[in-house]
Image (cartoon, rainbow, N blue to C red; front, side, top):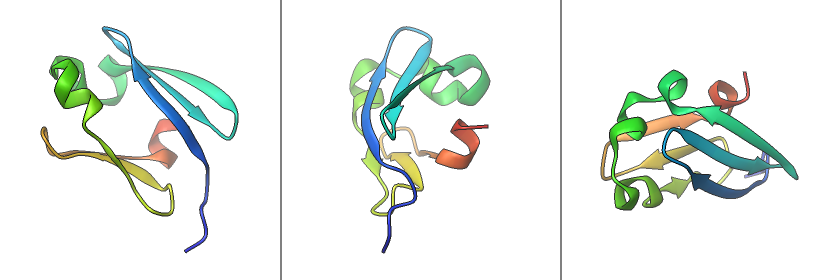
Length: 73
């Protein structure tokens, strides 16, 4: 399966998702993209699975899925 984008890193601040995709860092407000991630613990936030084709991210501990298309809009 061909990768659509290359997710290089995922980090969090208190209310922000910092995600590096294709060598570009995107700073995203958790209040806008996911209330579940906003209130999640550090452990829950850092326990994620990137889909094999890099089309999205899944956080199993909080049952949250976000596609890269949503993140990059």
